[in-house]
Length: 241
Ligand code: PGA
Image (cartoon, rainbow, N blue to C red; front, side, top):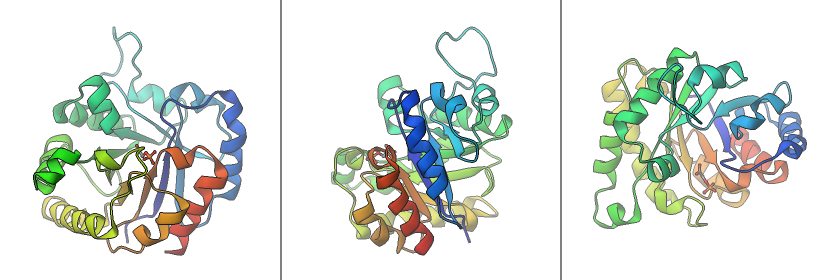
């Protein structure tokens, strides 16, 4: 079975006082689920022991003249075991292409971390009936050779559902995850074991129906991961699924 993962993406939110929420999340994380938080990199070192951590993005190079950037090795050194790659906000804000994301995924593996590769279609692409074409192109272009269930998780995040309160319907998520599972099985020897996460306005109130779907192995949660009282019920719903 793919491992169950409840991943929180704090984005550009959180000062040192957020440690209290992180402590509550670490203390309340249920058995049987990898519960992890991707805080801003400035907080990695301030997070409590025992909380699984991820970075939000990295530069593909190991080191060098890249002012303001962080290497995968730096994130790992600061305590991250996971790192997001290709989040739609990075693709939009920083113009990251699939080739850029593929280079980041390789760097994440080299640093000994596992990558959470984010893919997703825009509303325009969905309405033009291009959802699967777009997702397959992102998966093919951004996932380098060498991917395994141990070093890679794929997060499906429809761009139109991120931070908008518009969650994709269970039917929409089911159809996409089914197709992604098939694509991963075709490409990877252990593609059936790769965890597939859904992301986009996941909340305690909609988590259980998403986790009931065959190929939804967890969630990547933005807004509802900032507070333990919102995030822990999602992790518990996953544990119970
Ligand atoms: P959201 O963000 O849960 O606030 O919609 C999800 C994400 O961007 O990972």
